[in-house]
Length: 127
Image 1 (spheres, one colour):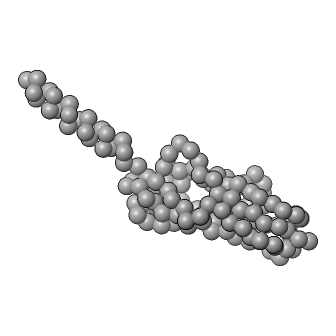
Image 2 (image 1 turned 180 degrees about the vertical axis):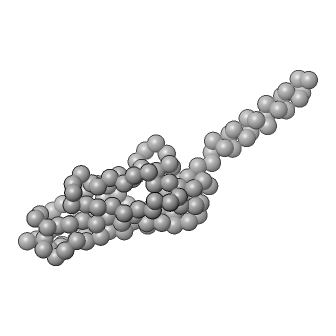
Image 3 (image 1 turned 45 degrees about the vertical axis):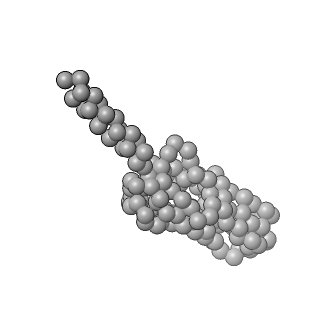
C-alpha cells in the first residue's frame, strides 16, 4: 500500500512540476526604436516591435500602455500567439505641437509573467 501511495505521489508531483514550468514567453527582436529627427508637422510615425512566443503555452497580450500621453497609440494582437509563432506591437506617435528631444516608455503586460516588458522610442522633433 505504501508503495502505491508513494508511486501515486511521485507521478502527481512530476506532473505538477512539469506543468509549473510550462508557460508563454515573449522575446522581442528589439525593445527600443530611435526615430531620429522628425518634423512636428510631418505626420505620425510608427515603431514596430517584432516578437516571438518562445514558450510552450499560447501568449496573450493583456494590455499595452500609451506611454503616458494621448500622442501615442498602441496596436497589438488581440488573439493568443501560439508557441513558436511571431507577432508585432506597433506604436504610432503624433509629434504635432511638440518640439525637442523625447523619449517614451510603453509597458506591455502579458501572461508570460508578473513583470511588464518595457518598450521605448525616442527622437528629436523639429518645428
